[in-house]
Amino acid sequence: MLILALACDYDETLAANGQIEPRTGRALARLKESGCKLVLVTGRQLDDLLQVCRDCNLFDIVIAENGAVMYKPSSDQTRLLADKPPEQFLERLRKLGVKPLAIGHSIVATVQQHHLAVSSTIAEMGLDLEIIFNRDSLMVLPTGVNKATGLSLALEALEVPPASVVGVGDAENDAAFLEMCGLSVAVANALPSIREAADIVTAEDHGAGVVEVINKVISGDLLRMRTPAQR
Figure 1 (tube, rainbow, N blue to C red):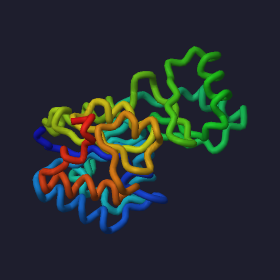
Figure 2 (tube, rainbow, N blue to C red):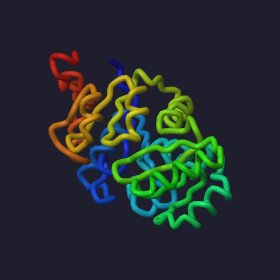
Figure 3 (tube, one colour):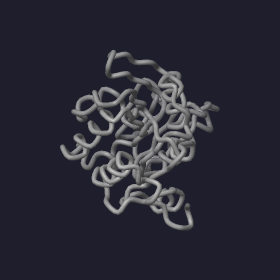
């Protein structure tokens, strides 16, 4: 497998408690210097991400809002990949007392305890929206928009085939983009379903697990991390 790019989730994968450790940032810089493309694929809103991620400029492309926004740090260009949430939908959620309620360019995010209220509202209003889970969080996006659709557009822009991408993630909303990558990796702290589906599971958790992957990519030994059944 020719590895041309690393596509990685942010929270609980690259970052712990919202922050990338210096060691992880240095490993990303080494990988980029080797000629590998870097794509960040996150559910966070872009403005929020730019406030907490000091290493955003390392990435060739950032896919934010779980596939709804594309950002190129080198040119500071943002491209919206999905429609805005319907205002009537937002008003109904506010009246129902759905809190917290984060609203991005396209994404609407809250916590899983409001699943019934959100799903019922979508059904009653006949909206073309779908719910995506991320651990304790719940995200609403236009139907068909997810991390895989966002990553696909990023790879087209970078002229990198999905088969040459190593994807790393930890939670339910990562499953779609991990499946499209040539090699999928779950960090040690990933949910059981993600670990079971991945080609490789790291020994270390969070950023340390990503460093583990990067070191193996640079040394050319990544495929040896697979279990015998996965080879």
